[in-house]
Length: 441
Image (cartoon, rainbow, N blue to C red; front, side):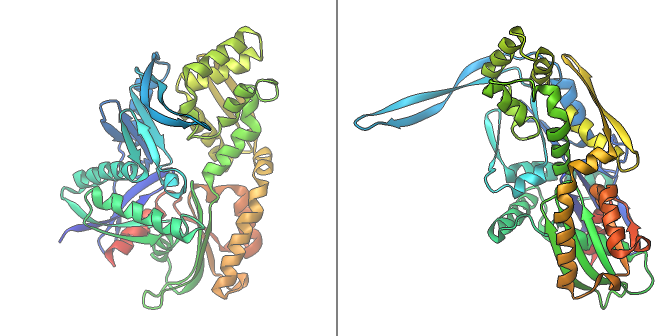
């Protein structure tokens, strides 16, 4: 009988696990990572279409791209029809491409499933749809799992958020895209489980009597909540589930928007809309890679020569043209994570043309993301109300996902349910452990 695995295809991190009926085994699918059982959800594709994932992808990207040379060439991209009041002609379209670019690093692959207007991306001569990207990542993850287990894996239980989208048709489309990607990556049998319910199944292994439990799954892409009766497998029940499209990547973006953009010229560059557009694109992981055009470089070079905020504009140029965006985003995320334990942190990035240093306190962070607190509390209370229970009837609140450790939200849970009811779980592996348990059912 073929092994069936659970796979948590996460926004920031992923994982694979198996369950033998008694014990969950988390597979060390990324031996180069600090936590081998956790693998970054990043994909690196080279110009000759070699692919890598996780820490290997990150290291390949740094080796090939950071502070490399660029050479732009004009390339024919197609034709367009131009119509006027009394005329029609065909016009050639040309784009400038960097012929020395060795590869593309892609992240937030799961987030792309939720974006209604995002169909995919051009990687050199090929267009990769959202499904293609997911398939490529899952294929490599599947191969790693098979190498560890020593046998083929044909069946999988995949996690999914409570809501990929508020629109039912987009939610269905996202799940079916992920299902098709899993089939194309080699899985013959594919089923799904909601991620907070998977985390509940993992928590259930630790209790000896029935409980009413709230699962607060707050990760990199979404907040997912489930209210369940656990402790008796024969009477297990999901009372209600809910979710909202708010999570760690939104907080990273907020930090950049409120605290980092001044390092790249915001507030100092005026009357230069082209440069302001580049500055305002810095928080957008999807937009920033497309800014590195010869036209934009010429604009930035002229601004520096003219003495227009030269230090900041030079930093902006370095961020874009030295392929430092991924490093920058990781430094911001690391600073955010540090504030779950520390009262202050330093966000810094020193490289060619960039000397960024920002002291960032937990108070500043909580002020910056305060506007999200009301939305998070509302979806939590709405889900409790749908369950038919009162907060006082909840026996335990189980936190999982990296964002669940942010003190602002931990304090909210303690205020609503009582500090003694809030339980910690493994933020990065409880979902995949539960998916493995579900796969065995």
